[in-house]
Image 1 (cartoon, protein in one colour):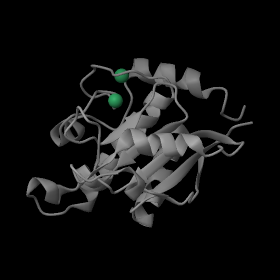
Image 2: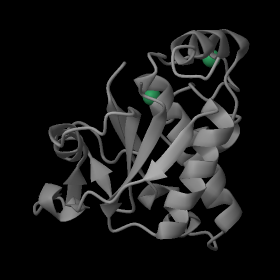
Image 3: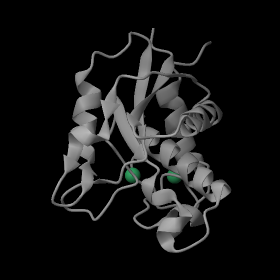
Image 4: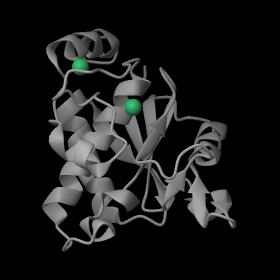
Amino acid sequence: MPSKIYVVPVWPVKHEYLKFVQRAIHRAFGLESVIKNRGIHADEAHDAFRDQYLASSILIKLNSLPPPKDAVKIIGITNADIFEPVFEYLFGEAQLDGLCVIVSAFRLHNRLYGLPEDKDFLFDRLYKEVVHELGHAFSLIHCFAPMCVMNPSTYIEQIDSKSREFCTSCQRELDLALAQYRQS
Ligand SMILES: [Zn+2]
Ligand SMILES: [Zn+2]
C-alpha cells in the first residue's frame, strides 16, 4: 500500500533543502517521506544554448526509474535553473495526477533579485512551491483564490504574496485525494 512521498535529490542540491522538504510534506499532507538518492544529475538535462536545465527531461528521468512500491508521489528537488522552451524559467513542474514532480530552489534565492540572501524567505518559497507542485500531483488545478497556495506563480512576488495554505475548496479536494493513503 503506497504510504510515503519520496524526496529525490536532482544534483546539485543541498541536503538541508531535502530535510526541509520532508518537514513541509509532513505538515501539508500528513504523510511520511523518505529521502532517496537515485543518482540523478541535472547535467543530463543541460541545454547548452540556454545554459539551463530542461524540466520535462528531468521529469522523464524521474518517471523512468521503477518507483518504490510504497511511493505515493516522488518529488525531485534541485538547485539547478530549470526551464521549458516557452518559459524563461520555472519554479517547478508537475503533471496533473502524475507520479513525479520537480521543484527548483534556484529562482527562490533573494540574491537573484539583487537582495541580500535570506534563508527564511528561501524556505518559505520552497515550502509553497513544494506544496503547490505536489497539489497538482494530487489532482488540484490552479486556483484563483488570492491567498491559496494553488494560486499560480510566474514571478517571485506572487509566491511571496500567497499563503502556505490551501483555500477551503482546494483543501476539501486534497483531503479526498489523500483519504486512500492516510491511516484509518
Ligand atoms: Zn501550478
Ligand atoms: Zn484554492
